[in-house]
Image (cartoon, rainbow, N blue to C red; front, side, top):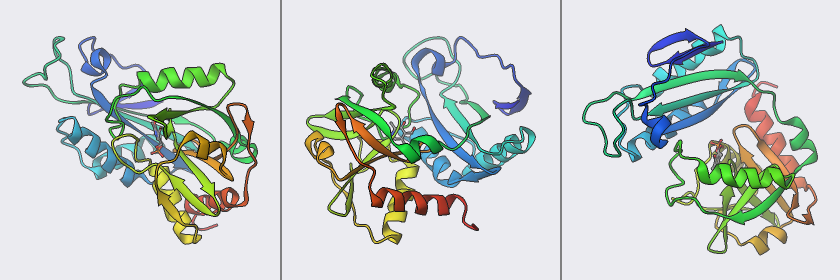
Length: 275
Ligand code: PLP
């Protein structure tokens, strides 16, 4: 399919420089944006977060939110994407290997689309997660290309036949390797506050709005692994997972509850507003 690379639209094969700092240092940022029925979902929020991530690591972007959306729309049209995902990454640029920022280099932007169906089975039946120690750095609010901690956690989950690794730092549940984590207890929805220890998920924001509309109290308060095991309902969320119920945490089986189903329905109405 058509790929956007550094100002050009190219079919399939692009050449990546061995001196790209994204390749050498993971020195860059990314986003994953949803496409439903050929339309972008919450794209403004994703590109605003991209601009924030860039600014936090001092990458100066020349493009605006609207520029990125225009590129995505062209890729969706030309690649005839219906249900899919768009991957966007920006690296600091190309320069001879040196940790120090290069004096003059332009950021390198890569954007491509791929088909991806909604995760209906996991949403319907629930998924297994494991808990493990959060060994990542202390700026998890930046959607950085450096994903080694997340990759190691996810691999451990995979080996345990789990879909996600729920990470625990200093006795507190932070987030999944690629998702946010919520518990429901006595009718209240809890999730970790959006600080430097988690990525402030766009799906998390949509869930917050759904909860408000459903009059489900939404409390941004960290909780312990014990509270996770003791919860009435547990959910993980992300752009690709949407609102996915957790039916097993380590060795403990969990039920899918009524508020999870209500949130899923409200989320679906955000995806298909007319229906
Ligand atoms: N937390 C982490 C570490 C992630 O990688 C992701 C997304 O992949 C999320 C949370 C969920 O974010 P979003 O809902 O914006 O996809």
